[in-house]
Length: 403
Ligand code: C5P
Image 1: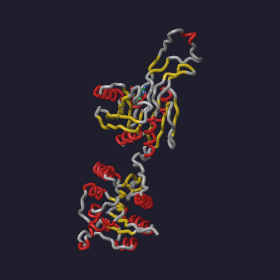
Image 2 (image 1 turned 45 degrees about the vertical axis):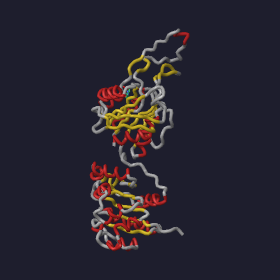
Image 3 (image 1 turned 60 degrees about the vertical axis):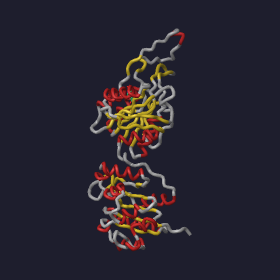
Image 4 (image 1 turned 90 degrees about the vertical axis):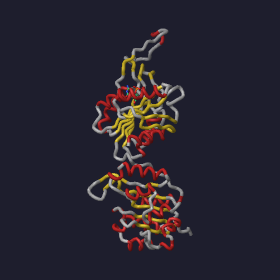
C-alpha cells in the first residue's frame, strides 16, 4: 500500500476558486492527505464547509488561530507538495516578494516542498509587466507554473488568464510529486501566425548547377519548432534544407530567391510575425542555360553575368500590415565587435525591419553547426538581446523578445 503524501492546497481569492474543490477532491481520491489553506478572499468565493467536507480536514485561513500548535510553520513543514490554485496576481506578487502576511504566505515560506501554482486572472493582469516579472522570478526559483490557458474568462471576454483545467493541474502536481514532471513550454504564441524562411537559396546556372551558400537551415528550423511548441501556427518557407522538416507546421519548399520571394509574398499578408532566417543570394545568373554549360564552349575562363535579386526582407518591411513584426538576420564575417555592431545598425535601418539578429559566420562558424551566438538589435539599433548556446535555445530567446 502506498503511503499517503501530504498535499497542501492553497486557494486564493479569484472566481476560479470554485473549481479548486475538484482539485482537492482529485488528491483525496488519489489517496493523498489534503490540507486546505484558503485566504480570506478565497472564502468569499467558496464556503469553508464545502472544503472541509471534501478535504476531510479542517480548513485554515487565519494566521492568529491555532497559534499554540505553531500552525503557520507546521502546515508548511508537513507538506510534500503545495499547490496554489487559483493563484491570483496579488498572491503571485506576494510570493515573488516573499511576503508572509497571511497563513498561506507563511505556510509557503516555511516549506521546502515543491510549489505548483495555477495562475488565474484577466488577460490584462496576466500581461501586466509587474505580473510578467513576478512569474519570471518564481519560475527562476523553481516554482512550477501550470497555465494559465486561453479561453473564456469570467465575463464575456476571452483571452489568456483562464485557470488551467483542474485535471491538468492535478496531473502536473502528481507528476511533480513523482519526479516525472516535464515542463510544457509557455503557450505565449497561441493564436499567432508566424512565417519563417530558412535555409539557403540556390540560383540555377543550368539544369545541373547552381550558385548557393552554406546555410543548413538549422537556425530557421529551430525557430519554427520553438514557435510551434509555444502555440503558434507556423508556415516555414524552406530553401534547400539540410535538416529534416519539422512536423506539425505547413512547409512550402522553394529553391531560388525568386521562388522564396513569391512564397513569402503570398503568405505575408496573414502573418503576425515574419522571420527571414534564410540566407538569400543577393545575385542570380542573368540567363539560365537550357542545357549544361560545356567547357569546350567556354574555354579557360567562364564569365557569369549576375543580376540583383529582390531584397525580400526590405520589401516585406515596406509592405507590412499594421502590427506585423518583421525580423531579419545578418550573417557577417566581420571579426571586430564594434564594426559588427555598426554593420548591424546600418542594416536594420536600411532594411526597415523591427529587429535584426546579427551573427558571425565564417569557415567554421555559424553555418551547419548546432550552436550559435547572436545579438539582436531593435529598429533603433539598440541591443535588446544577446544569446549563445544551442540553436534551439537561441531560437527561444529570439521568440522571447518577439513575444
Ligand atoms: O543584406 P543581407 O543579405 O546581409 O541581409 C540579410 C537579411 O536580408 C536576411 O534576413 C535575409 O533573409 C534577407 N535577404 C532578403 N533578400 C535578399 C537578401 C537578403 O530578404 N535578396
